[in-house]
Amino acid sequence: MSSDHTDAGDDAHNAFITEATIEGDDDGPLAGRTIAIKDNMSTDGVRTTCGSAMLDEYVPPYNATVVDRVLEAGATMVGKANMDEFAMGGTTETSAFGATENPAAPDRVPGGSSGGSAAAVAAGAADLALGSDTGGSVRNPASFCGVVGIKPTYGLVSRYGIVAYANSLEQVGPLANTVEDAALLLDVISGPDPNDATTNDGGADSGYAAAADGDVEGLTVGVITDLIEGADDDVVETFQASLDDLEAQGAEITEVSLDSLEHAVQAYYVIAMSEASSNLARFDGVRYGPDTDAEGNWNEQFAAVREAGFGPEVKRRILLGTYALSAGYHDKYYKKAQDARAWVKQDFDDAFEDVDVLASPTMPVVPPKLGESLDDPLQLYLMDANTVPVNLANLPAISVPAGDVDGLPVGCQLIGPKFSEETIIRAASAVE
Ligand code: GLN
Image 1 (tube, protein in one colour):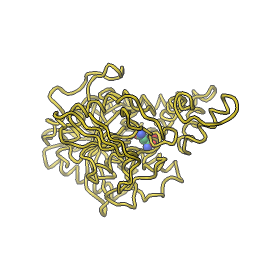
Image 2 (tube, rainbow, N blue to C red; image 1 turned 60 degrees about the vertical axis):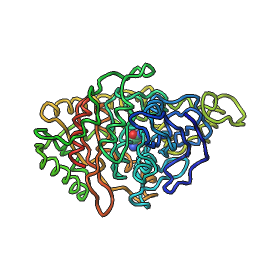
Image 3 (cartoon, rainbow, N blue to C red; image 1 turned 135 degrees about the horizontal axis):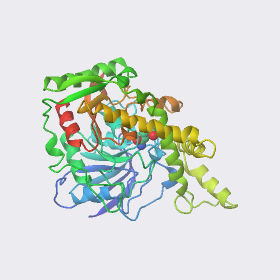
Image 4 (spheres, helix red, strand yellow; image 1 turned 90 degrees about the horizontal axis):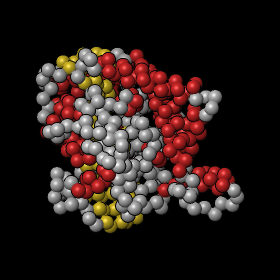
């Protein structure tokens, strides 16, 4: 393997923070393929910024397990993909390195937080990409950019070497132009890792790529009505075309309602921010973060590093997360959120007694225009209504292109029970 590190990218859509090549092995299932790696995944000798000024000059001394696996499978890394700062956002606009444009509509956001990964694939700058999905960050940009993205079951893919945002929610996931390619990448990255104790061997025996055969005869698909109600009409209409595809190929379509989902966004943000506030304590200028010339005691120096290194969205989340965990408020917010999470899990378990797969539009809206979302965080959080329930329940889901509204991509989300990746891959390949 060789590495050739150039400076920050001026690529057409600002899909990359750092353009750098790391050659993979000569052969393997990904030989000849190029791959973009989200910039929260450690790459030996190539800076890994997490989209933050805090890590502007951070160069890891080792590869994340998923990076090792794609290189050993023959892929060549072509760059570190742009992302929302510390993966907090849904548009890639909170990146300290400037926003990424949506290749399908350059005045629009590519989604996020793995927006650079999806844009790189959509623009043909990479054949494949890795993203991470804590609350939709693979599926959201896949949907907005018109590519395929998979959020695996919690525990299927190693997170060793990934900069943590909210550990109980996140997974690394593949992005590609076709379901088969995304499934092939999942074959390469999945499986137990002694360096990540949350991984296990619940994966497929015969391979995920082989499951992309479009055979949905007899499959029951439940449309989640609660997630249709909040979506724009033209998005729902486009999504409907995917259901027609599934039905035409022998699937049975029914409707399902999950009452708990009205609390999912609130529960997600309390849990994600709480975990983030704890995870981000390590960025103190001693363990991680820039050395500043700040004078004063530890508290003053800690504050100065964090004041300079973090952007506004990250600061907002650390403050809110710290508040939700603080004595006196813990029961009111954090514990309530955990109760709601248990209810969401139970609702999904019950639904899967009756159907094989659940379906919804991946995003309730088409990609917003660049610069229109950041002023209204609440609006941004609500945009995650269809994706975050999957993370709360630790389930697998895939976003596959359903069509477009005046050229703006719309994604169809298919959700399955834990470790049913083969089933959702099969269903998604009947939609594309
Ligand atoms: N938009 C969500 C958030 O900001 C999702 C982030 C993610 O999946 N990394 O938390």
